[in-house]
Length: 398
Image (cartoon, rainbow, N blue to C red; front, side, top):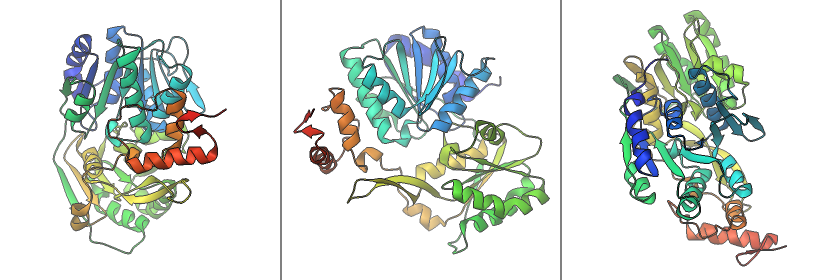
């Protein structure tokens, strides 16, 4: 098991949590926080360590990685729980879960019996379930579980605001092993995205490292795989995909070292939580699928949107882990300059009726938010629940 940058601060992390109930950890992509911190927390003998991940794929892969580093199969000391799938049992002490799983667990076990530490990984992604989780955990610790420890980990978040929200808690920062990365922009083009990817790949294929390409979803990944297959074969590259619909064996093939260099076509799951060793070049499509809600029906959909500057920086950082890297952004520098610094938290742009109903069932309808949702969104959520007959005022109906 090789050393990672986060290893230098693990003793500080453990000692801080011996003295304080909460902690914020800042560490850049690839520092090793997702895999090394949970295992180190077992030293505290505080009960189960629950690690919340923003995606199912990240939860499964992180659990397998930590189990491997412990010399075990996943499902023993380290397990995972995502929607419709659980791998673990009575001896499991580290659970990697999606954030929504925690909400469901709080509905059935409001005090989280047996859980000593909850780690919110990749907090900067700020899904609705992320904000719900930290609000409920903070409330639980301040009321019925004062011994519960909360750890927030992020790559791009300014820690001061989270530290204040958690009661002026300490922060620990880990530096990353980052080599220089040359960033190239691409003039606007009407050429299909997959053809732009193929052209960019031809420019970096001679550098012999793995090439990580970010695309919005599985459909775009399949089209890019077809467009790049010929050039990849000629250059001696394997074309592999990485997204949530793949079988675990295919996901492992994308992440683990192989006999030949790889062109990895991935969604934004490779932006955080998962580090792919050997990547020396990144092709950034500049897009991601973002959940939005219809203002007329409240029903969700996934739309393609431009990523933020913070996401672009995270993607670029994947190219500088093992040696000097190269990034080709498939958008212009003017386009980059006009992008927002950070993604808008989902809690401030989503329909909230389901969140309000869960909170009401838990008796936490007046929870204190890290970033409060807009008053109009709260009113709309309560209004929808009223029209559905689920609530009368702020009380559940029969």
